[in-house]
Image (cartoon, rainbow, N blue to C red; front, top):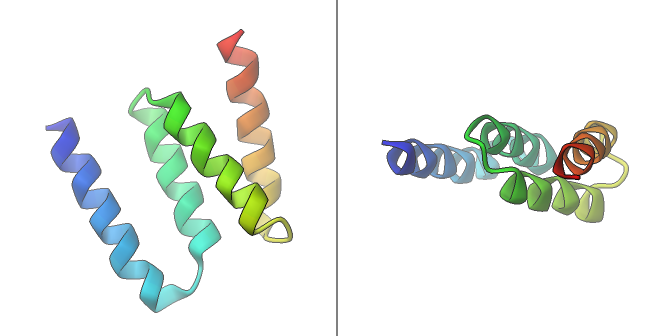
Length: 75
């Protein structure tokens, strides 16, 4: 079931990315979903991608905060 939900979320993200042009927002939402699915490693990768590719976006600050929180919990 978890795999099916993840597949649907990825498909939706890919479908919407061509329409919205808001890739940073989509990456952020996917990262939050990964956190909720107890997959902090993948969430961190997505947050890092936002910081790397969209450093000036409104989601960069949010991604930095979430990444800091994930790293604190990982200790």
